[in-house]
Length: 231
Image 1 (tube, rainbow, N blue to C red):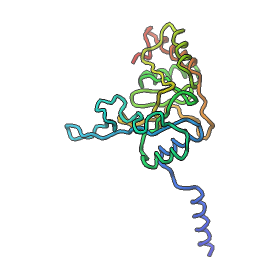
Image 2 (cartoon, rainbow, N blue to C red):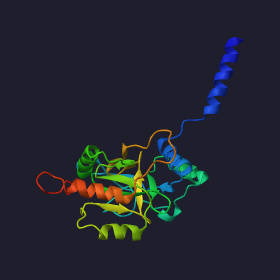
Image 3 (cartoon, rainbow, N blue to C red):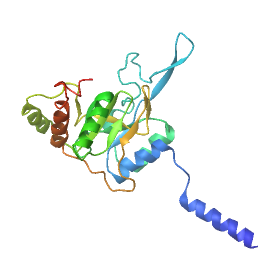
Image 4 (cartoon, rainbow, N blue to C red):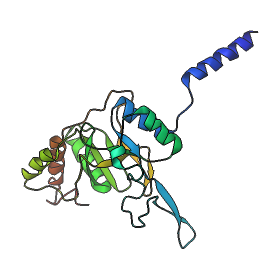
């Protein structure tokens, strides 16, 4: 009798916990419902057979020369990004492996990205300079430093005031997007190089001015006088 009651208690406990959710759905729900970041599913990668018989990862969109394979919105488009839990669940229930796309700007994070090699060097320099950074997203080709939302006017004034800004930098602001972990794209896995603190509230984000200032300083501090961020 005790064994039967024990089994029932364990079953009730398991039901309370609920089923384990796919990684992409869990991440999308965290972004949308806990952090209020508008998200939507990306087009995803598509396997293509190479001449040697192997598989090459391309993009699921119709463009055979897509420059960001699998890592961009397609159907639905970027304007469909939402924080609505029901919509997010519906999307990733139907497409459980779809990449997680963040619509940047307005009240959502923006980002400053740079090539992966330069990103690794920059973070090393910024750590030695004791500069505080927010979350950092790493893809095989580029690293993105998340920053607080900014307007196009604010960014324009910031860049105008600089004598020199590394040409390798890209800015993801209002009307832009960014692929987030744990997505798999046509170029490979997306991961957190600097992850948001587990169990924290909305992740802290530095102002774009502080990040650009730090990157410019890191770029011009190369021992040979060249740029650390030119790769």
